[in-house]
Length: 206
Length: 219
Image (cartoon, rainbow over all chains, first blue to last red; front, side, top):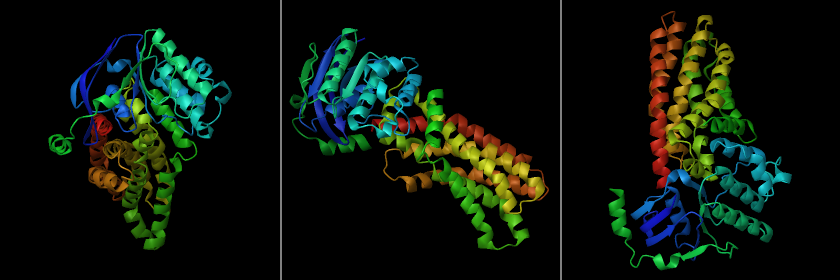
């Protein structure tokens, strides 16, 4: 189980945002994507998750190993914390709901409706799903948004533990997370030199 | 897939789940007809099968955009698409849950509402049977329309335009089987064709929906 990205290009809408991105990750590796807003961090993560088109280059990873967490939490407001996680446990066919609730500091909140949680608490609930999935490759888009310092550290720990257990993590963040083994990739270097809006429009649509 | 199905049922019955929406719309439409067309019992009995079927169909249409839109808006659909569940299974589970929370209550409510429209005695069993057999097709075809329009904000108009033509055969055979029974003719041929349409939709629509969903999520 590895992630090999070779010379990949990404488009958002009809506009090319990244060109020539290459990296290679083995079990235990983690990669932090950096770059200014709009550079294409989310777009790249979606492409890796299989939720966006690969506009060029090759992508070699097993889609069945991927767990994706976007900038939305994928939390149902009308369900309680426990019901939310129990649903994902059913989807991923596991029975670790209770352990995961404890690990993400959600025990006191487990019978509350998710709609009544704060933004940071919802975020934790969304991230708890990653552990529940039992999958090896974590793709996380700004996982630390709305989290306090204590829980940011908790998430960093959780990612480190995941990688120490042979997992791979790719995440975008603007904070300095305490993940000792993490490599950093600045996406600003992959901005396409010339914009090819019109030709992409013609090639892509007809 | 069972987890998704039971979650959708649970969400439908929670606050804001929209379970009552289709049912209330159906009740209102059917109860207003006697006020609109007058209390001519013979006329009401003649138009009752059509009114009940059109009412059920429109009520079903009203709730279609919820099938995928809510999951799309909170990011759940993205995660589901990367989960071990196949997209065909996701769409089938969601269409089935839509039927249980919409088609089934409409079918049950239609029988007492038939009484309000002076539906003749022998037609009740056929009304119930035709709706029970026909409404799954409405849910599965509707899920296809909902999958096509999933990324579009307030795509209700487009969804209706896409789905209504596909609903016409179901409406024709469903209403016809009830009308036939009212007229004392054999309703079975129409009902059999209706069952065929439903089976066709249940088998093929999840694949079509999955393809529509895939192209929408990857766009």
